[in-house]
Image (cartoon, rainbow, N blue to C red; front, top):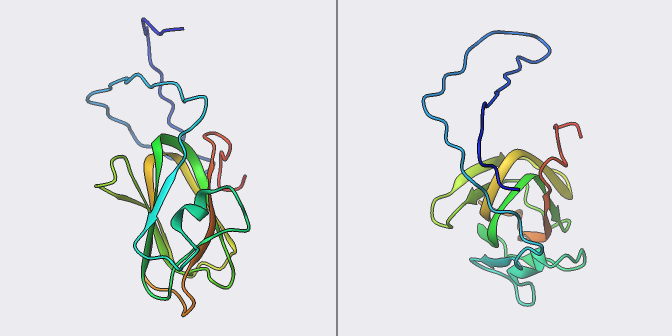
Length: 171
């Protein structure tokens, strides 16, 4: 069905368990129509500034746990074009140990030119990094790895968490 008329818009502002006070001021509110998600999302296209032989960037988005993009030691940059803007509530980065970086930045972009930092990870320690990103949306996702601990980085898979599937950090 097509929305043809809106009589009212209600915004709820919650102070949380501890209470509090404040205000919200809106000067201009625009409602923008959104396209319905496609029945099948386009195949993601991954690139990197460097990769080891037989460890191409697209192996981190192939849906297989036994493959990985692998970079040589040093700084690295990996990014994926999802083919269309996607909403997500978080993502999971699955790293091959011991080739998991402890430090990296996760960035997002609508156009692949202007980037916004979503997370600044330092001293990461898991084989899987679960990153809570409520109400996130992007077409492009990028990892900036400033350095790797002598063995390079190995990203087995990037997995997006569907909108609403991860409601709070504790889910």
